[in-house]
Amino acid sequence: MSVNVLFAASEARWSEYEGPMRDALAAVGVEAHIATDMAPGDVDYIVYAPNSDLQDFTPYTRAKAVLNLWAGVEAIVGNPTLHLPLARMVDPALTQGMVEWVTGHILRLHLGMDAHINAAPGTWKPKAPPLAFDTRVTVLGLGELGAACATALSQLGFDVAGWSRSPKEISGVTCLSGPDGLDEALQRADYCVLLLPSTSATENTLNARTLALMPKGARILNPGRGPLIDDDALLAALDTGQIDHATLDTFRIEPLPADHPFWTHPKVTVTPHVASETRAAYSSKTIAENIRRGEAGRPFLYLVDRQAGY
Image (cartoon, rainbow, N blue to C red; front, side, top):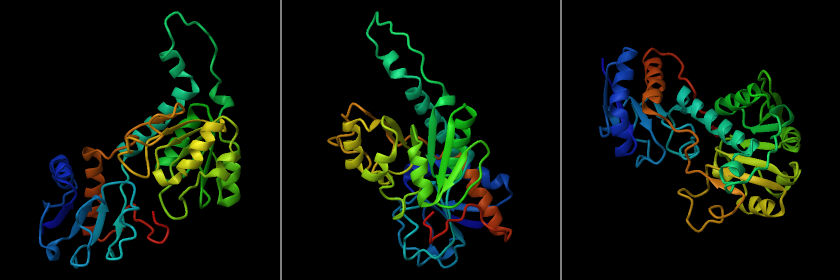
């Protein structure tokens, strides 16, 4: 029997996903009808992007799950009409992309690459960069992406700590948790990588108080979510030199408005939300596996804790 899969995302996403999704479902032995429009009462699964026009899930009485195309679920998790299981996106390409962005930008700052790339002709000021062994990195958020980045940085030789709300254990990483653990994690952060989910509990994790805890001249990377940082507090800390540099990939408003001071601040690097992207060839396999599991009566993977918000 064929299952009906509603693809509730943009037209551009549909053209990207149609072929890979059909191939991925066929590969796991699921016969499926996939479309961007079908009667709500006929839908078995909803593949969903939170910027979709679909906002009322009430009519989808037959559906078994909503399968998110993105890692972040903050735009859907609070929808009062959603009473179906909600699965976030986890796939190896998403994780690999984040690891590459985080390690790349930390190494760029750590090695002082900008000074060499932008040096005037004839400039010759040899100075060896610090070693990773002597540099402390803190990763805030030890979910799938945070744990992978913390592990990769540890394997490069950095002294890595990670913080999460609940206790975690990761080989080679000093794991901290709870409110006191957050302060401790920031106090030893020469570099701070933000990979927390966006919830009411994590908003403004970096604020005037917590930024002041960090070593003077610390660097910040935010490929997580824009609301994790109090923008005004960060700008003030950059201006005083408390924070030496911020590399930001996510923002409260996207695209980042052209008149936002981040664009022109000499100590800020802006990247256009490219740290990690779902790629159809990989994420389609995660979706197909969850549909296969649903049809086999097995538990879904990567279910969201609705109370925690992620």
